[in-house]
Every structure is written in structure tokens, then in C-alpha cells.
Length: 185
Image: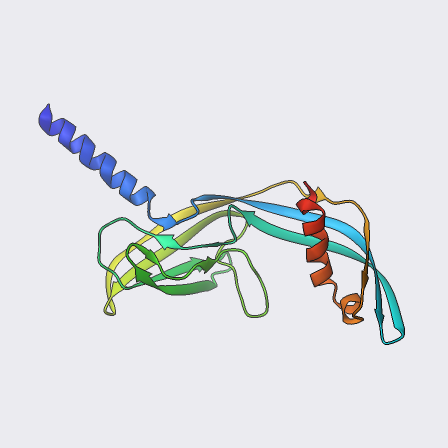
């Protein structure tokens, strides 16, 4: 009986160790999508422009960035995370390790000319590789679910800007709009 209890305890400990390997923010995130319309009037050096802008945004909770963490007790100095999308293209990101977590936060959601996110909406399987002095000491994978929430629509609002460039590219003003509207809550 004592041997059976020891085996069960060991199995539970190994399951909890595996459950702790992954993103520090957890394995379930929510994708919030926002939209709304603004009217923007821009003035600069005697010139005037006016545009209507359909603003949209998307963000994750609890965070758009996260550190990788593990609790296997393996000594490692670097982690490499790899995601393979449905078309077979892989994205790889790495960070040095401090203690049992990555030094850097990984970009989970921001998509720009210079950044690619690690996650997409739906189920994501991320492969990880821990290395120490260039030698692989542990490999594995973990799943992260990104649940897409219903689109929230903010009310109409007007803005004025002292820069004509805001009327050509309203992304800054859209960001301000969503903050002013408390992210459509």
C-alpha cells in the first residue's frame, strides 16, 4: 500500500511539473477585438484635413507578452520556442534563462513589420528546447488556448489634431480613442 501511495504521489508530482512548463501567464488567454468609428480633423501650418476612420484593435488578456517558465530542475542557460503554423512555416524565438524562466518576455500577439507573434487564435502547440552551454538538456511541448471573444464596438467620437500626418495614419489616434472609451467596456 505504501509503495502504491508513493507511486501515485510521484505521478502527481510529475504531472504538476509538466503543467508548470509553459508561459508564465498561463495556458488560456482571451483575444479581445475592438472596433469603432472616429472623425478626425487635423490642422498644421494653415492646412486642414478631415477624415472618418474605422478603428480596430485586438489584444490578449492577461497579457500580450510573457516569459517562459519551467520547473523540471534541469540547469539551462537558453530556451528556444518554436511554433509551426498550418502551412508548415515555423517561427522560432529564444531567450537566455535566469533561474527557471526566460530573461525576456516573448511577444505573444503583436504583429508589425519587425515583429511576429508566437500565438494565433485557437489552439497553439509550442515546442521548447532548453540548452546549457550549447547542448540540449530538455525538449518538450506545451499547449496554449487563445479564446476569441465577441467583438466590442465603441461609440462614435470626434478628435482634433495639430498634425496633418495623423489624418494620413490614424493608428495613434485610434489607440487614444480606445483608451478614452475604456476599451469599449
